[in-house]
Length: 121
Image (cartoon, rainbow, N blue to C red; front, side, top):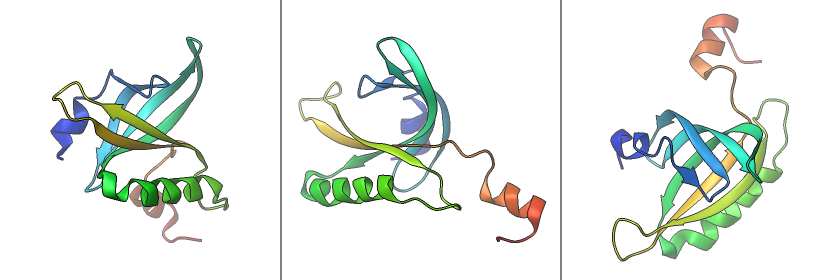
């Protein structure tokens, strides 16, 4: 899927919990958005939400990988808050499965950090 596909999702909801407010970027596996996490019509926090389409044959393995990512804690890693499973069947009769990873938004890109610091710690 290309950037145009992911950009069209701005303004949509993922899993009736995340309101996608800004497209950040995309890669070969999915798109990343700045999103509001909303519970009972209240914004709880802003998150970076990575969303990607999953083939059903790989679903269990990829869910396990996302759950593992939420348990990783390190000074040099962004905190991952939760893994999510979402579905979309609006376009056609087949239901697509999307996975999401809600994480702490980065304050700068790696290239910005390197320009400022020169090297990694």
